[in-house]
Length: 300
Length: 279
Image 1: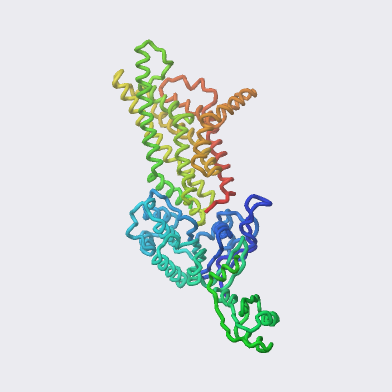
Image 2: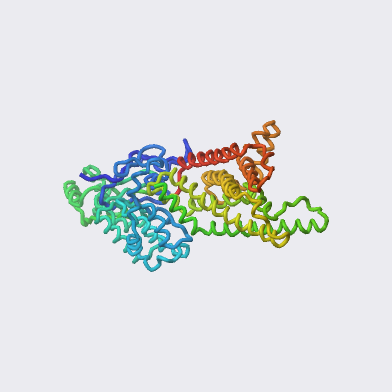
């Protein structure tokens, strides 16, 4: 049995009153302890609005958010003490140094001592810039400091929105490894990102949001498996497509030249079915798409 | 949690440019006003008058002018809390640090309450510094012109009370600025609306109340009642009779200033608790 640390039920946010814009439309999410959960969606899909509600910054129009089994709204925020977040532009006082910013925040957490402040600066690779003013930081450095802020109080749940934004490839890789290490140590990571290969590498499960609705949710491997495409080269693609429509599990069929593309079933099933209908494929391949293809397919 | 947050706000305050600039600017402006008023009065006296009745900046009346006129909520005593409250709140909306506190499980009322409470100390420090520097300038012109002023003329217990009265008179302005900050979330909007109310809004409102026969009610408007409170600073000169002609009693003026502070803060909290915050 999985322990659910983050759950939303029928979560909805409409801006501008009745008739206004529905940014998030009845989404149900559940994130298990210790997993890295990817939250994907094109720009304007409602990801940031959903995260705003998870963090108690936006009042849901309807539905509910629960973290660690406790409700979260702008007026119920106790559960957020176990959460670290990096959302949007990293929040910090520009005239202060990195160290001063962390010291200010450490005042909120009695269990965070000087050693932990140094430790998080080391983790995010900012130890040498600790005494520099934040206003002189590059975007990547600000992002690293934002991560340090999120990690400072050893949260059980991290909610991160584009954490590798502004980082170079080596930095992105470091952060990916860090997230995996944190998850390995028992932390739960809710990762919103548009870098699909990053999500594919790091996440155990994902939810894909489009126009405010969750269009897919589940384990990355299963989502990719569902979308596997079997390509058969046949003498009569129209007849083959007609025959394959009768096969259980087929979700989509498309004929293109001498090929038929089938989704939702294995290559073995396609082969057997075609042969039973006296259609012998001269070529049969099965391709698993990457997350980018699945994402584009689901959000087009 | 509240104490922690208050301590954090204080630490931030003393590292903030806005505080240092406000402190230095207030001190410089007061020195300029004290010296300027004094020398203008001297020139006017030498030419046989003609530029109106300039107040004497000689000790000890100079300190009364400082605490009742210059540092009244209608003048510098209003500008200082507007600047500090704007810097304390609105900048943090922009930096996202306000949202950061809230996303760490700090209740909204605690965040805003700690910010409001944390404003009191920098206001008091600015007031003390302004009084020392402005009072010093007054003592200097007294020494240069008419010889050393007499310390015996000053009731020092009343001087301390005058600081507290002037501080109390600043609180409704600070609370109003916090309310405007919550409503507009914009530096320009907050500064503009707060200064507009200080310089024009309340005069218009007072005029309207007077026209409708409610001139007594006009005395209890936030800036007016706070200004009335600072008039009691005349009592710091021994034997001064000026306080006897003030139209609102000291206790009523004090209660009025605190009540307006509570009303503005209450409205700010009510709105802040219901506000959707962008990230």
